[in-house]
Amino acid sequence: MSWFISLLVLSGLIFFHELGHYSAARFVGVYVEVFSIGFGKKLFSFRAFGTQWSISAIPLGGYVQMKGQDDSDPTKQSMDEDSYTTKTPLQKIFILLAGPFANFLTAFMIYFIIAMGNPPTISPVIGLVVKNSPAFIAGLQKGDIIRSVNGQEVSKWNTMAQLIASSQEEINLKIERAGFIEYKILTPTLKETTNMYGESVQRKMIGIASSGATYNLKLNFFEKLSYATEKTISASTMIFTGLEKLVVGDVPASQLGGVISIVKITADASESGWMSVLFFTALISVNLGVLNLLPIPALDGGHIMFNLYEMITKKAPNENVLVKLTIAGWAVLFSLMGLGLFNDIHRLIG
Image 1: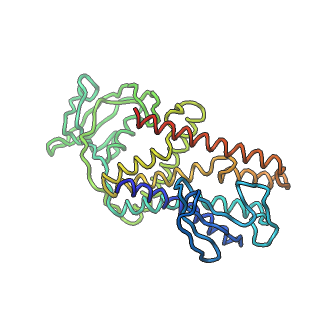
Image 2: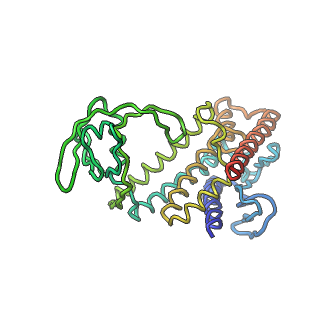
Image 3: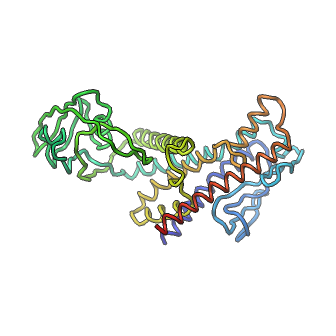
């Protein structure tokens, strides 16, 4: 059942991505011939609104086939009024951006739904004090609740940790212990640790660990909007940064995951409850939006680059060059998919 949920999640996100392209294309008057979830042999299809809607055998993506536009053959064009070919570069960019935008919007809506469900967050309750650490020397104890850092009130463990990491010199902690308020002054020390990308970094720490205690956020309507916006931006920034580190070599290529990883993690999340599934679904949605904006021919970002070139130079890209770049783009895309699949299988065997 969990694997079915993961495939349903992936297919749903692909649907919303392609629906973005479809809606934008129809808005500017482009005829959409096919709307497909998946590739390969068609398992189910029907016609509606002049378009053939299909579900295909290989659920690794999807596509919207517009009149006068075909990634498998860039030379296939149509000069009819309702063709993609006859639209201005700006209209084409609008169609191309609509897919990734739909993914970001979907993520925002999912985070908003999460906010409506009063999501859990980790409380700033100490579960462990490292011996001989600044916290140990200052007298902090297991069960202490940190209420403020340098006068700034905190209610989340992450907020407290960020304030400590960004502190300049000594810090003043307001703690609650057995119902009484105490103040502690201590100086963080630089410790080597790893960040979310697996890199070794120096970070200011005081030698405490979370107890794991959580509480549910209770947000008003505007706070829920703020929560959804913050989470969408945070996820986008994290993925953009991760891709940048992957390209420059700060993160090894072995960290790249493929569709098996996505399906497996979503399946695992489904066993932890609907909130976990929603969190990971939103993250995948942002991931799809970011990846499709990469300037690789055959992806939305590559087509956007071609249209920007036409807008700047006032002439369309050379047809021969366009074909070669598209082929190269598909080669890069399939290579990345192959590497992700290889890494996934290696992790499963390991």
